[in-house]
Image (cartoon, rainbow, N blue to C red; front, side):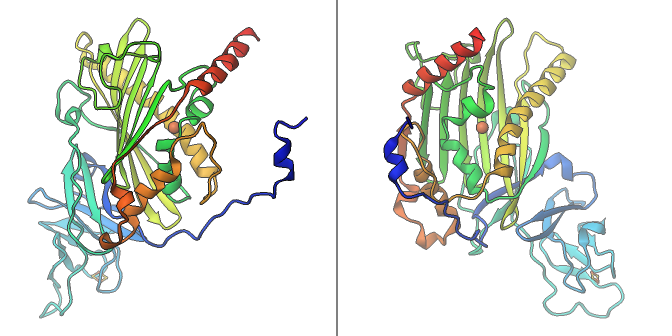
Length: 387
Ligand code: FES
Ligand SMILES: [Fe+2]
């Protein structure tokens, strides 16, 4: 007997997949840890359908320009930093951080129109960000400060890695509302399933609050607000507060209780950088809060281990994102989170400001009832153990 005889008589449903939009999201995009760009050399970054060059001039400022030289298309990222300019390797034209050509060494005059695109940049949380806006307006999104990035109580810099994903970032953003994948993708079906799962969307932020192991505990703090208490005092064995700030900058505060060694408190950072319409770079960074009773060396080792662990978990998702198809009409069940509502939130970054729909920025919250799923998973776990 099929589980659902009715389904046999229904028409077959097809996946709908509209063409990938040519437009890239409006927002701050992280190019990497700022320390990576401070060696006096030009750095090439493929992004937004072109190549960018990042360089630090003598004044210490990190500049981002379009990398292809307006003279005859030379690649500035293959050039040399001279003072506060980048010198093109082809005919030595010099380009300043604001995009102005300051010298054509072999000519009497600098020609009209010798100004290239300079990207608005910002350094925050030891990240270098660029602002992308198809309308050309200045930034209107405040980025959150990550205190751990500035504190001696945390690892001194980001542990970092990148992956290339051939898909649209929308398919990755869906993850924020995806409750069920934790058990199937990350849990190795051994546990780790969320007991508490809530999404809160508001303005340009979308947050997921998740806890495991606190279901039977009387809450000692609000589960759906940022937690600022003693890391050792989280209610369950895992707590996560994960927020997209705009379309491309995600900060996930993670508390993880391990038997005997206490709570590991870390920040898992994700950045999306569109390369071309159907391809983006996903960067992952990790900071780990030090344990005061350990030496610097021991803390560095612990940070590295944490990074490897979180990289392993993130790449479980990456494998899914690299292989999944673009789907406009996900077929959701009552056990799923608010994927469509999250996409409504996400849409705001792909239209002109004047066209943002009120529901895209309206406050929205939804807690997913995880009780049935957890009963099912508990049974599956019990079955696994008896094998
Ligand atoms: S192409 Fe850059 S100086 Fe000629
Ligand atoms: Fe995941």
